[in-house]
Image (cartoon, rainbow, N blue to C red; front, side):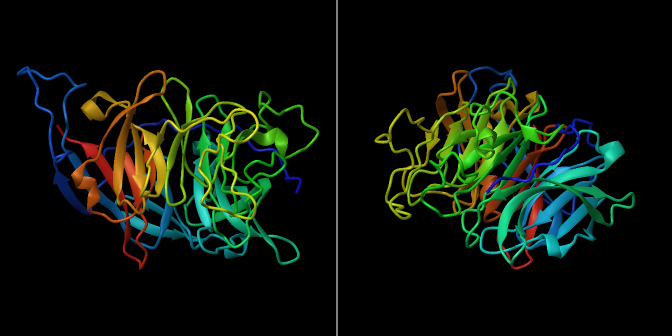
Length: 398
């Protein structure tokens, strides 16, 4: 299907400072690791300090919150997979009027990831990636642009940025958005549990796509920009199963996180035109390896994989700031089935070095999305269902 592409204003991640007036509803504090590495010196540098992590329940009473983003003046936007949108500010969670007619929800697919306009203070615009009904009773996954009203009580659809991301039953719907430091919009997609999608460069499924948000076109240096096929021009990388996380490392490299089958959840460093090797054909054969090196050409192996069993890796964010000590410059990866946050260290060349798993972050059940606040603290959404989910704030405290 040829995607519908319309213009959209330039976007990047918001970097204004978070106000200091974010109150806590409840707080759990604990040491970061079950075993700390002792220092040989009485004075420990920030790079070797293992800080205590304080976890605060900011917003509560949610049901499967998929993503959370900071906008301005201490306000957060929160999506629920069911199609509900909320704002949070000064300890108060408020529903936003959001047209249910734009959301198609089934299985893993619904209202999912968000990105915020860098000119949000003036435009009040944000993007969503969501399942949506199509003409004739069908459905797909698409990227839409919205405007939040001045009172932050209602969202209005302003334009459609991209359509045609495949969806069948709602399984493997993706869908993660990332605004890069140079203004690119990345879209991580699922394969819709259709075996041919990941290796088919004319399908938008099982890919990381890259768009130019200033005009809605494929990014001008995409590896297949000269293709005669409209979909292929969007493709940055392919051969993915179900991309759940996207993150940009300080310094510029791009990373994805995706679900494995019964083995091999993956963290990948993205390279233009790279094939990450998922090819579950004939049919949808999940006994196939996540990276099938028997395919023609070259397949790029994961920088980290879980082996067996999987932990259902999900959202991710790079940790920045001296206050994080040993966690600084690590990739924080949420786990759904594994019910933890894994702080992974990769060296400058991108090779996996090791991991820390703070025990304090194993107490909240399934964890889906991780976002970084302007002051470096992290926000994490839980995914337990039953109206008992939260947005957690994680901050190092010495």
